[in-house]
Amino acid sequence: MAKLRGARCHRRLKRAFTRTSKYRRKSYIKAAPPHKIIHFDSGNKRYEGFQYIVILYAKKDINLRHNAIEAARITTNRYMGKVAGKGTYGLKLRVFPHQIIRENPIAMGAGADRMSQGMRAAFGKSVSRSARVKANQAILQLYVQEENVSNAKDSLRKAASKFPIACKSIVEKNKIYDPNVDIRDFVVEDEPEPEVETPTEEGDEESDKETSDETPKEEQPVAAATE
Image 1 (spheres, rainbow, N blue to C red):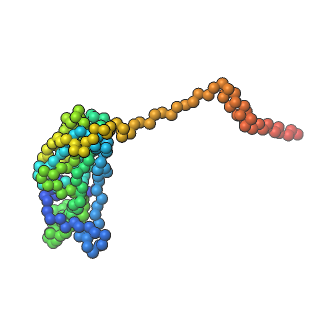
Image 2 (spheres, rainbow, N blue to C red; image 1 turned 45 degrees about the horizontal axis):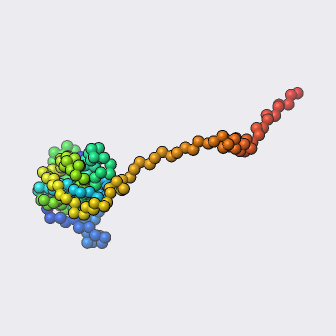
């Protein structure tokens, strides 16, 4: 299995020749690799029921690969679920990995001690995907109530450690907040255990009669004929 290259190899923003089209002759990239982001919206998705938004911004231009974005999403989701509780927050990703990363490996030989001389600036083979993030652009945001603002900032601080750049988190008021919306109405609760009905004495007698009528008579073994 090939080892994942460091973020320093793909972090700079360059001109993107990564257009994909349903017409093959119009596509620069013939086959795009799938991204690893599972959910772009996690937690409680009724965002109008939360008072505040904590947003994580990038301080520099960067190519964020899809595996780093997914790692940040998992870290934030697990921390908030452990500290704040299920259904008390909403997580939304603000970027999508449109950029397709290409690679042209030129190492060759058994010990990779020689380098090929031709095709140094080749177009390359598509190996991964990334999101083109500009400075002061939002990467992800958390919808929380007032009592969970500090927990949201801590979770975004942990998520920023998955990125190869410095980030900042800013707390804002939710512009679509509706005080009439109760977020507890949209939390999926655990299903209760099914109730087991205890049969009465009359029910027992009836059930015994039914079982006695239904049970077939046992066949008596046929004695072996003796000479």
